[in-house]
Length: 211
Ligand code: VGL
Ligand code: ZN
Image 1 (spheres, rainbow, N blue to C red):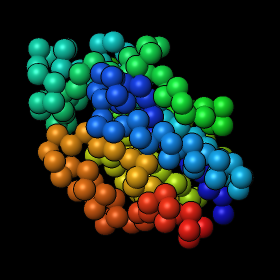
Image 2 (tube, rainbow, N blue to C red):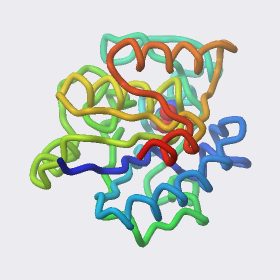
Image 3 (cartoon, rainbow, N blue to C red):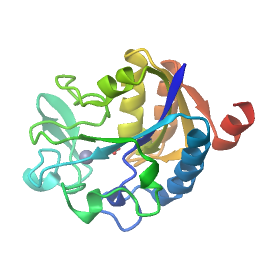
Image 4 (spheres, helix red, strand yellow):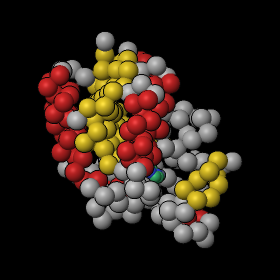
């Protein structure tokens, strides 16, 4: 059984000083680097997703004269309006500088279509278009994922739910994730939903002790 570590959106804009900074987002990078070493030593693949928006992306509050973190509608779906973030080729879109990026075998962009948002690393939010991630994983005969990253209540959650739907065995490293928490319980609820749908939750220490 082949396994991959999937690092979700470990980008500057979701870390301290970034445009859509997630509280304690930076603290996930050490967990990621520990897992990178752990996975490398065992021959697991390492992949990453990268939120990669055009400057006029439809999820940006600035495109709608709206306040960031309020709700609207995009592409027929409820949409949270975000501060401009992860604009293609900007510093904010880069993976965190302390992440051991050389160990990453493949990076998958998402959110490039200005008309629709894409929280999951597998599909856009309307499930109309696929990124290359599923095909890459299948090509490498990967059936099990270790998932962590930013943000728990958006991109991690929807990536995990899609992975489960696609038939992967999914392990989530909870202390490698941090949430936006527009509502204070959003991250806790996201973890409960992931577990209810079939993901197994571990702290990094639990994972290392049991594997
Ligand atoms: C994300 C909000 C907007 C995420 C991306 O990576 O969780 N959240 N774009
Ligand atoms: Zn985004």
